[in-house]
Amino acid sequence: MKILVPVKRVLDYNVKPRVKSDGTGVDLANVKMSMNPFDEIAVEEAIRLKEKGVATEIVVASIGPAKAQETLRTALAMGADRAILVQVDDGVEVEPLAVAKLLKAIADEEAPQLVILGKQAIDDDSNQTGQMLGALTGWGQATFANEVSVDGGKATVKREIDGGLQTVNVSLPAIITTDLRLNEPRYPSLPNIMKAKSKPLATKSPADFGVDVAPRLKTLKVTEPAQRSAGIKVPDVDTLVEKLKAMGVA
Ligand code: AMP
Image (cartoon, rainbow, N blue to C red; front, side, top):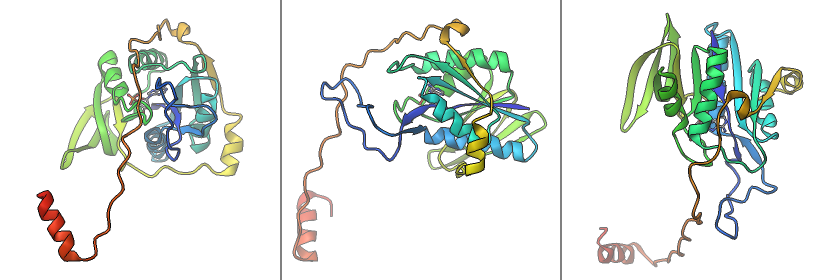
């Protein structure tokens, strides 16, 4: 069974985003970029399914600039077998619908039994691509996975929902999106980083799949979160209680 894992190159989660001075977006010049954390979890889950003998091949795919090759190499170093880069020009933001159309075209060619995506990319916070891919393929989807098992042509997925977990069965082929607590992704070992350099990485363009990646949205404005005002120190608990009462909290 083949698993397709789409991975996105995003601003590293440890980096504090800086808004460009003209307010048109986040400044990505000279900042550390990494694999979207939810996609690391997706790659890890695919590797675990391969280690259990459920999957036989893991294909990772990214839509992004030439530098997204680094992200794909990281996934190969973790344990994926093969990579596909759908390359776009530097600075081009491909929206979730176009990403989903490209992933549908890749899924048509590769015929995976499972596509495991992150639940959301931490740069655009869209939480749309998996669901759109589900609609385009007509396959079942289990989003926000907290636990996954695959057996006899179906996947059983525990989903994180408000205040609890929901367990669903979805017949294969299917789409799964990962939530934070699904697993803890491994760090690639040095020998595996070296080995990953010679694993196959195919480069394509959106035109190869006949997909138009022209944006449908225009960003009007991006702003930093409001600054928090400084707190005050109170001398004792009684004063604190008085102040809370005055604020209507206590
Ligand atoms: P989003 O809908 O943008 O929040 O992204 C959800 C998931 O879709 C991500 O965690 C990735 O697995 C996948 N995805 C989104 N954009 C891309 C991209 N440019 N290349 C590869 N995978 C992507």
